[in-house]
Figure (cartoon, helix red, strand yellow):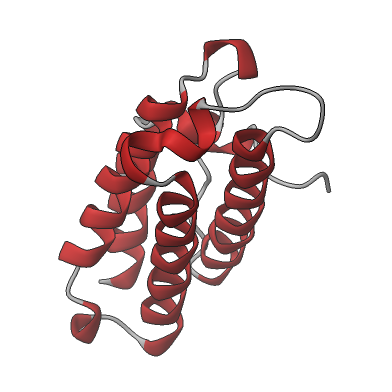
Length: 127
């Protein structure tokens, strides 16, 4: 049952481009909206019907997404009102989100022997 849930989750996430789109194609407000969609989807999954490993990974991914959303501020204002010089807060937050989600995806793919879709493989750490 958990293996099926992982496959469905990966298919859902593969359709969201915030995790793997090139920087020039990313839009701050769009990424925040997608993060909200994914967080909502993770919230809708009944963790009680899954084992503790998958439930923990779902909670960890949701926490990473909610942190990204919180950092964006209302209407992604904290990401869209950036002026140089200095680090781009959107790029930093998105990089952190990608790294955290990527680790969870690697862990649960290994635990449940599920192939990671090509769309999600772009942001995984190197071998």
